[in-house]
Amino acid sequence: MEPGYMPFQMMDKQGTLMGFDVDLAHLLAERMGVRAEFIRPEKGFSTILNDLERKRFDLILSGMTITPERNLRVMFSDPYIIVGQAILANIKHKQQIRHAEDFNNTTYLIAYMKDTTGAAAVDKIFPRARRIAVATQEEGVRMVREARIDAFVYDLPAFATLMAKEGEDAFLFLDQPLTFEPLGMALHFDDFQLQNIVNNFIRQIQADGTYDTLYDRWFLQKGWFQRM
Image (cartoon, rainbow, N blue to C red; front, side):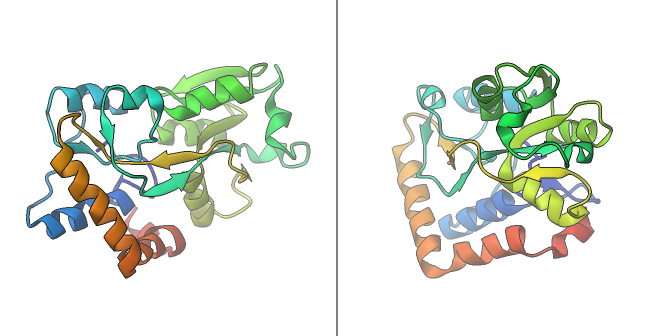
């Protein structure tokens, strides 16, 4: 897990992991009768698949989109949530920008987080715009806020959470998803037993109401903002 993706995995003021994925991991471990141990990739999200292949840990639960390219290297669980890329822009664009396609112009500088599906989305949807890679979600948001870039393409739930926290006048948020992205847990290619356990776990919590409780806590309620 690589923290830094609200509201999936984050560090609170005391440096403790929290978020939707964190609670999901603890719950999975509890149902298995084991204890969850969280390990960060050695060089951030960009190396997380390499670390799994080296068997530094058993699975990745870090807001990872299931893609054919990644699936050539690892197995995935069934999706546990569906998200999509969205646009967060500086508030100065509120009057002239109405649709995502309006940013497809050499006038605009758009950021994406490197080694994510957002990078591919920017290449496909905004081929005419100037583009720049950022290392973290926090860096991209900060650059938008400071008007060092015009917009940042990243996962919609993270931006929705940010807007709920800061208010509609903090940024221009285009909340129509640009892509369709299922998130899943990544596992070693030969770990069919764990894949079976995880898939059955996902089905069970979606059926018994546990999933809805977690979703409500992290995506609909705002109480956890105070811990940030």
